[in-house]
Structure formats: C-alpha cells, structure tokens
Amino acid sequence: EEVREIPNLVCLMGNHDVAVTGRMPLDTFNGEARRSLMHHEKVLSASNMDFMRSLPSKSKVRGNATIAHGSPRDPLWEYILNTLTARLNFDHFETPWCFVGHSHIQSVFVKDESTDRVTVEQTKPDQTIELRPKLILNPGSVGQPRDRDPRAAYAIYDTEARTWTPKRVMYNIPEVQERIRAAGLPEKHAVRIGEGW
Image (tube, rainbow, N blue to C red; front, top):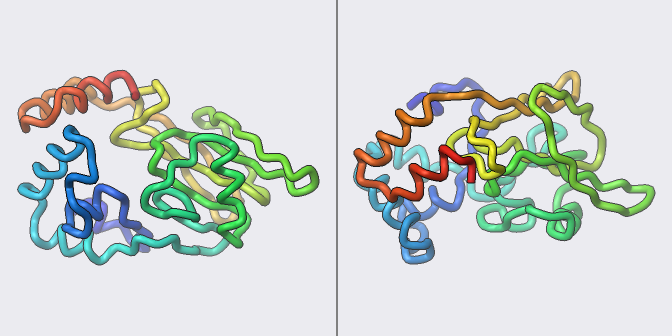
C-alpha cells in the first residue's frame, strides 16, 4: 500500500513478483524461497496482487536512465555481479546509465569508452557520485542487503544534478527477525538480514 501511494512511481516486476502472481512455477525457486512465495500468495491482498500483475517485466527508459530489475539483457533473472557480466550488458541500453537491482549489492560498474575497459567501484554511504556515461548502478536492497552490511541500502538519483548518492540506514532488525519467525518463514531469512548476506 505504501509503495502504491508514491507519486510518479516507476515500479518494475522482479523474479519473485512473477512467481507470486502465477506467471512462473514456484518450483523454479529453491525450497526456502518457495516457502516464502507460498506465504506471500496467502497474505497479499487481491488489489496488491492486481497491482503486481500490472507491473512491466521488461526494462523501462526514464530520461537518461534505463531501469531493469536484473539486467537490461535479461530483466528478470540475470545478476550483474562482476565486470564480465556488466560488459555483456553495456550494449543492451542506449541511455548514459542503467539502474539495476536483483543482486541486492550496492555497486557501480563503469565502462570507459576510450579504453573499452569495465571496472567495478564499491560505493560509500553519503558519497555522491557525479553521473557520466556509461554506468550500471545498483542501489542495493532495503529488505535484504547481501554485501555483509545489514543496514537497509538505497540510493537517491538526482535527475537535475545528475548525481547518485548511495545511502544506508539502520532499522530494528531483531523486530523484523521476530516477525519472520512468527510468520513461520525460513530461519535462514531471519538470520541473513542480521548479517547482510
């Protein structure tokens, strides 16, 4: 409900959204993810399921940015975790930069057009990056960061200043872990949010 109230929202379907809305068999996922998906099938309201079904699964272009859940080459499933995968994706978007998620790891992949070299840069919270062609940026994950930092991760994209500012914020992890356990979800999901993996 809170996400749906955001004005001018650009929201994409992710791999778990595809499964929970019935567009993909749940047995595509490992046992723990499958248990979580079955739980979400039971607790999501009909209107929220309809909202999720309405989301696009392909990349979207908004101004200077291409936005994809996984990668511009494979929007639902591909993880961009290294420079080789990033290199393969730079030819799949026309905009100066591309924003991705899926890996849950805050990072920036840079393609130097003059040397044709691709590098990865780890981001630092509150350290603003001036955007320039050609970049693939990942804001990380609010709900399940996987870079060994359990704080919620996100980024602020300033379209006018052309900047990207990675952010981290603490939240009440023990309370969320208890809610995971109370819902009967896999213990692994409660443990991992406390350790950021």
